[in-house]
Image (cartoon, rainbow over all chains, first blue to last red; front, side, top):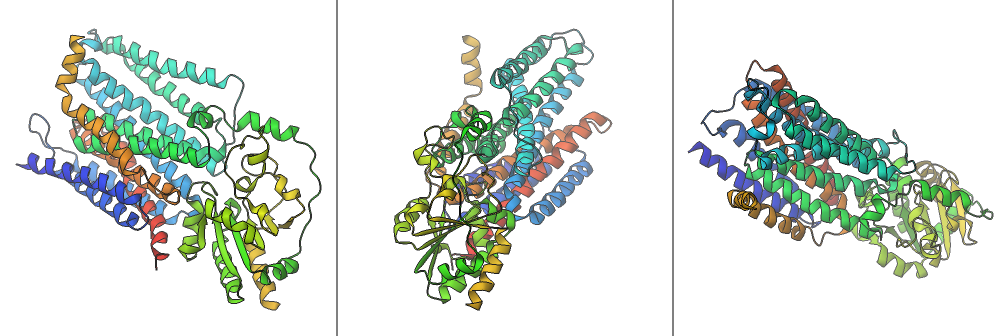
Length: 477
Length: 103
């Protein structure tokens, strides 16, 4: 009876996962979708704790440990998720993803250890004689994928918050392949060893997978991290599904595979938004090649600066102003100041809109989330195509800390690493004012010709401070 | 050959689930606007936290005097919970902001 109820719990959970994902892909229902999936998850978790029985009918034990772990995890997880700044969201997602991967790897390790304990006495029997191949592959796949996902996510997290620098060396892809081969070789050796001496090969699987995860993400440029995180996200999904195989658990299986498939598609959609292929992101990394290109770039002309008061005048007397937000806005937490400027200009009769590039910021949708936080109305946020249609009738484009997404090299320079990426054609507007902290190149590490064009003026400084001063200036006009 | 066929027969339910879920996963998010990429990724991230069920089972099966197994399971439960709870809360925070603008 109890077991049957548990089956129903898992069924409900699986359906909520599917519904949740479905609703998450529509702005109107997204929040509800998330809550529904969370509710399904809660049912599955508590169902497991209280109703699960193994094949011999034993119930679970160690309730104190289970609840202890859940309480610690919940408190830390909630605090971390609530405290994190909007700008650091992408890192946080990566970190949580890493936790999931580590969890899957630990389950495999524990299961492995469990088998070892059962057969400890028969030390010289081959491991392959005890465990069927399919079962072994599931355990090992969970361990490998989980570990790679864990270390990869941690590196991605470090890269996004600047703790880990891009690093690549010649022949890195070959080294990566070798490490991956070592992982698989260790897995085969472990399976063929006797029960008594399989600990070392099993440890080696983990070690090599650990190294592989690091090497896999290290050379990939910071601007591509969202894609990598999404990919690792789907890895973790697959690792979770391995656990589902292991325990014949349908909720884990459906949840895991669902995320694995949806995550893979999402990864490809993200690549498409940048007009690049996944292979290009993973192998043709921004790293070395881009740097060489930047160094070889021709000496740029001169740029002109614009003062705050001039900016204030130009903007207040414009008919239509477009604001192009980028990572600089996120770093400076300038979204509220930005909204204030928008309101002020609207009061003066200026039409203000925002042009949102799909990959502005560190993650797709990053800017929408930030601006929504500052109560910027949804209909003011225009997607790239719509914005490009409107730029020719725009008087002033104010670029706030965006760089690569407005770089004309993406259209004109085939040698540029971002060549082919659709950009915002801000040059169609009458004036372009660029707010940046300095002339340093953007995340892709390449120069931006736009800054040296005659239409462009530079307004240096931290986005928030500049906006606040600008608001002051406009009020004083 | 026989062993492969046997394996497929023995696990056919699971294999069906896997195949169908792959298609469901792809269909379900097929037309997501790029605005929602980040929240969707975050939501999917929380859903694969379902791995915690495995962690609970490992933990619950561990002999109470087998400290290695207990510690492994305990860590797995903590990490899995972090993934689930953190994932859903972060997603909710992101989406909370989307809701306001609807008015």
